[in-house]
Length: 293
Figure (spheres, one colour):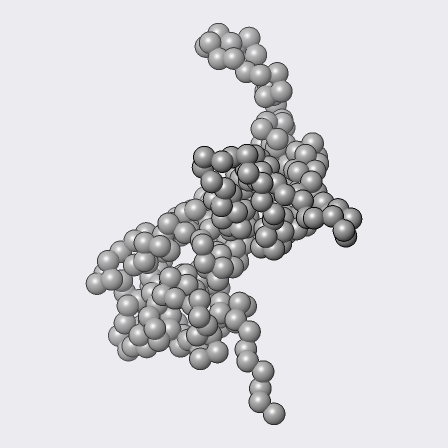
């Protein structure tokens, strides 16, 4: 620490760490040899205590507990800190953010009941913190993929182009739910493009994806969206990318320059076929109607 203090930097005792290959910093155990970071048991217990405080239940005759702005902001801060390493969890914060926005900016002392979506989100985080060996890799990909990848969507379905090969996926009638808009469709198309890349054997790489929807670009960068369906897709895509050590670089292109524009409308005649069996993302979030008897 004496060497650090020579530069005039003041480091709180709890923030200090040894100059070794394994050390604790900012609530994580860092291992420079295995390239992994693990949430410390102290932080895990602290965050779980916050969640249990919010999920506590009183006697049946008692009115449900209410919580203030500081309570909600505190747990959001803890979960955002967790997402520094577990970035795929960023899509699991929307309900908490929305609830915090319900507090009047000039009446921070007000207290509100927790709605069902917030309770569900907190329970999901509680399950996550109970995961054994809560660690993640921070290894950066060693390669950059040269594949030319484009995705697009229309009211008809989704299209993907990978290095001159294309495919169209028609959106089935049962998937035309009320909250399926073009933004959701565009995210589904990007999800299909990622699946294609993984099936083609790309691993340990930075991969560039071209899309013509800025909403998709910004949602992918933030890791979350206000749309429930987009959030589900983002979460699954993040896990797929992580499992293959792929960093997704999302680049915006004008519609006129998007090679997947025609395939997204069902016209892939100008391309060789993209012969891959991919999981249609809408099948995971849209329930088919029961067959009539």
